[in-house]
Length: 98
Image 1 (cartoon, rainbow, N blue to C red):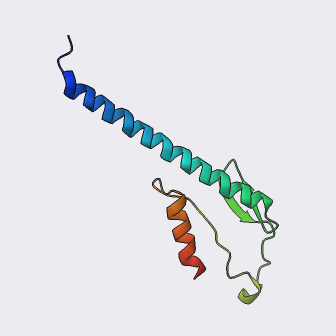
Image 2 (tube, helix red, strand yellow; image 1 turned 90 degrees about the vertical axis):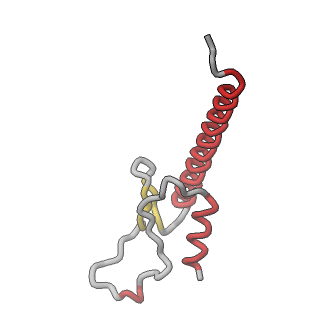
Image 3 (cartoon, one colour; image 1 turned 135 degrees about the vertical axis):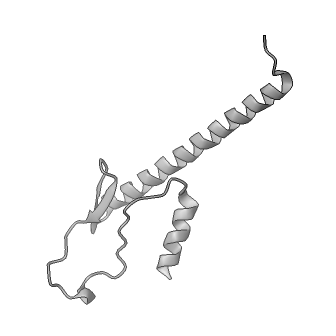
């Protein structure tokens, strides 16, 4: 009944390895999200909303406040790309730190 033979087994093996790589990327991404949200929860200046996966300042600046009074190094993260991993995020933030 099986007509594929050895080449079919190779294709199935390649498929299972691709699924394994995809799952490991997903685990890394979830770990990165968890790491960022944990750091935000421990911060005195920002708060994390785990249900919406967003980060915001704990105290919003008052309207009309001088721009110099606001921390110029504040970074607001709206979302991550599907292909982002720990290394790509670290490189992106390293460019902002310069």
